[in-house]
Image 1 (cartoon, one colour):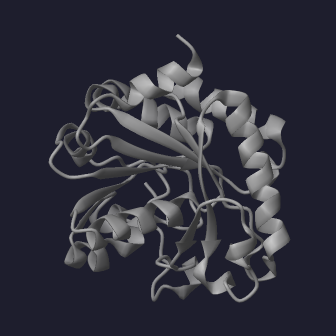
Image 2 (image 1 turned 90 degrees about the vertical axis):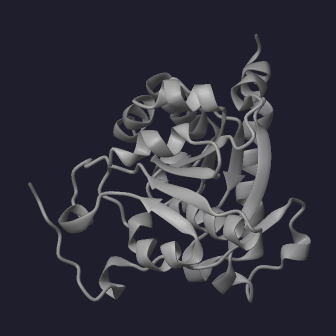
Length: 244
């Protein structure tokens, strides 16, 4: 079975396949996962957002728990005084979220060896339900600058998780220095990865704050405009972290 055939098989016939969003530190994968959850609710589909990123992250999807649960998004993440823990305090609700098929489920997974191994802990349940796994890449980050870098990352995540990628998303940016040419650069490399691996190129991401510098009409690709839902650590009222 070819890689493309395997990707199609991975999606299965599930009514609500699990959506796995993976990527390296700084790729924007958590912001994308949060935006997908918000879009699901806006489309009339209450969903579950599962934080599986066990590496000390710059952003944490768990930070939006209270606001999102009011909107119909159930956030599964370390709770209580573990909500800012640096250790992989996995909630027992993760397996339950994957097994239920009534609501869409989005997994925010780390794109490093530790994150891939955690994802692998739920491999059987994910395959049983059916899934789509997307890699979010920013060519201006050290781990995903080139086609070769991305292929290495994809191979590592697939090997350690037991799951395969079905799509790739381009999110090349330099925050407030982002311009149209930079976005196009990321789309070009992401498409090369898609062609090399047989996975689908899905979309290019553009942060809403960058629309005054990025002309999306010049981007020859589907564009998903990211709204900023997450805050930087110093933007929170409390930044206390708990360690065990």
